[in-house]
Image (tube, rainbow, N blue to C red; front, side):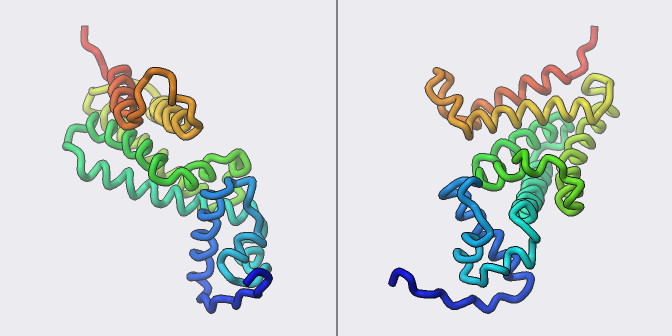
Length: 209
């Protein structure tokens, strides 16, 4: 019945935090980040309107917690992709790029908040900063491994990692924003990702005279 007050759910401390993150994602999937408020997250979770502020401080803090969980899940997916790929370093590097695009397709709400301009200064949220750097460190380590085996060009491994990251990130973002559809390029984003990652690592590969 409209207007009926929902009873608060007796969450434990950690459970409530996770529940608020889940409900926040649901709201963003339906309404975007613009439709999110602390009160709306509380109402969706069936808890007091003060609960989100108690756990996260403000809306930015709630979004930072969501982003941190997103990065954690993405790192797990990237590590699984490395583990299931061949032992060839270049193939593992390619697998990470494909995993990145696949994560964006599976978890668009996570992906959007992870890279939202509101959270560009991650130093205010140590947990978020740490896990976001872990994703880049994973990519950088793979680049360095390829360099150690003389498979790709020399240079700053982090800069080369940034080159690879920005390319797959751009592809994922274009797709999520509907900018590839209708361009005569085909609609299978993972086929595009296969080709793009192949071009990236062809460009990084060390060529002998």
